[in-house]
Image (cartoon, rainbow, N blue to C red):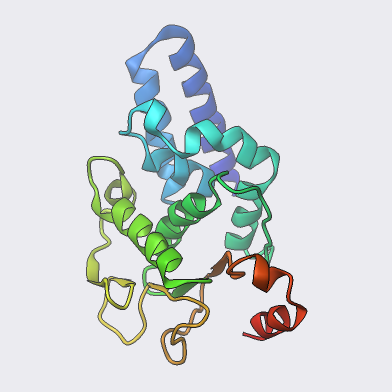
Length: 220
């Protein structure tokens, strides 16, 4: 923990000096320490480093970072990683980047814990397929993202677009990521011993206004 505090201080100073002087050496130093932190379970650093090679105006996280930090979204997910929180509920307006943030965070969580199992659910298979596609893009596109720089020894063992599963490291019954709608077949699909994410489980206004349907949904 102390080492990460020192590293973050160094990368912040390197970034400051690079901005003041335009020095490529300090910019390189900034990313070296970001990578060190990203490989040691630091979510904010991992999110920044993932988009290192992207054109700044096309980046997702960096332009939204101050807002995500201000509302403690990043800090709360980090607390879950550090086992300080068990349950986190996030409510934000549409279009603020919740699902994309979920994709980025899940891609890092899978890399940090490749032999654990994560389950992501939503109200429809269309949305879970979108989450699957988002994680797939991050872990397989070496031009846009630096996932393989953060996790150089991690191999993609297999993917299944029909079952919307992705597996790392080893062959097994349960996969690193499983994406399945709330009404999809979940029995025996995964053990989900790391992260369970639920994104927009309510399908629409009719379900939202129907108490009986909400009770049934909560039970599921």
